[in-house]
Image: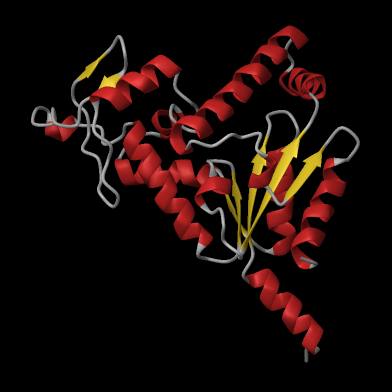
Length: 240
């Protein structure tokens, strides 16, 4: 039979969701996977993309076009200027017409080719990703990776937000070695992904990815192993 202290630890763990924000090239996805495995939690990462593909009857590749990628400022400005915001709780209609030069999708142009319509645009993606993360956040036993989950589940006492970072060159070297590409190419990938992540959070949620107050725990992988980081996160949750 469990002692009183063991029961308290178990109950606290059962109600704690973990979000993991990570920079590319710092092994954040692996760390999140190991934390979920050791705690017996659901790992919520690519599952979100797969769920949206099923809901919208599209492919995973189509969903990934929107996944954690921000738009260029001019395109985002024009879309907000020309298209009405989606009302809370509503589901955006698909777009069967758009302006290729701006990528602007018009929800009212759905009357043609209904059978072949694709029910996914950036607004739909954002609505669905937010709803799914909120649903997983209610389970009490999930590690949610990226997708602005630190914003969507912010302010909740039953959620802990972790950020995993590493120096630029360290990340570039990891990408170069892991993908067997040149260091120059790896630097470009790291820079692009950093820009995507910052733009995505700013445009979708009006937040700054670099804001330290969004996170309860930040791990700099410059001098910490990925294995040790897993234990740090688990101890942080257990002893909070």
